[in-house]
Length: 395
Image (cartoon, rainbow, N blue to C red; front, side):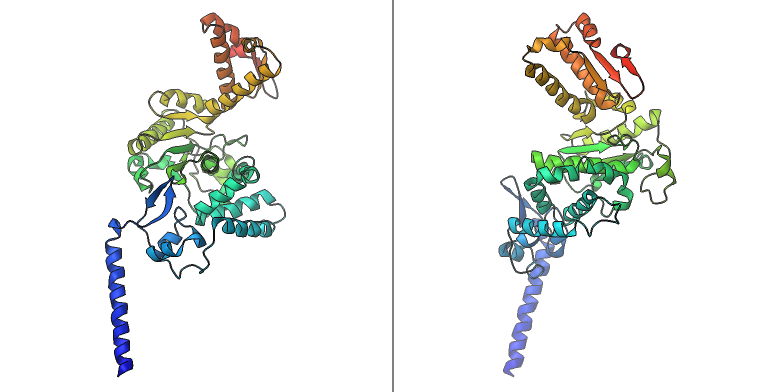
């Protein structure tokens, strides 16, 4: 009889706890549990149990304290040892060195791609640990998550794709983009890197697979510049591809149509820009690896109305100008001698012409910023490709 009473009391206790859990779930929208910090402020989340562990934004793995495990209903769902991030990084690095060979898809698969695969798996399950690994080993892993490895990743992206990252807007989404932007879960986005895949690095048209360049660039912004990873968004605008190999590849993930051109192309980009700035009015949009045909036109079209820039035209140019001015100083010459320099630009892509235009404007300003100064600066440049050299006066 005593055992029966004890069992009844135990059942009543379990029922009360069950009712408490149900009530907590119902009222979760007003709860104030937190699992991470944004700067020095707690970030409030409304997820519990396995939903937390399956969310790479908030998952900390075995780094959750017992207090957090109780509040978030994950006690018992993790091994009992609470590990610091330093311990987690050491464990991951040991696994990384061990798996580099095993992660290769055959002898033709380079080790750098194997490293990318392992890092990408970590990114999928635990963003906090991923960025800590990247920040503490930035010299080693920056070439893995971005150039030069990202070029190989983009070439093979249809086969490497496992879990979606970022957003995809396509020619098939015309008329729907204003509603699509609300499918992204973040209420605030500070930085978007967008590409149309038309000129990825020096590899040409890679279509939808160019999303890898936007993902890699934002990874560096988070790890090296401290941007909140929950407020960045890599974007691919798929307007088709002129890469015949991709058009014939049954495993290609993008639209298997030739690229839109003219007003049709502009309409897609216009709709995208209006949609993202409607939802996130203060976002910065970086255009990345657009072919020269569109890079300059889109920059001129949007630069006075939106917070945007073209990295190839303006970002590369800014760094190049700093280098050119530094070269003048290194020669022990005064800065006013810069307009006297003869400069050869190798390649007439958006980056090369962007550097040329920026350097030419810099020279013109030094010479008084007049029409004569501008014409004088033009004569200092030559653009050269593999077959022919062209005087800059043709631009």
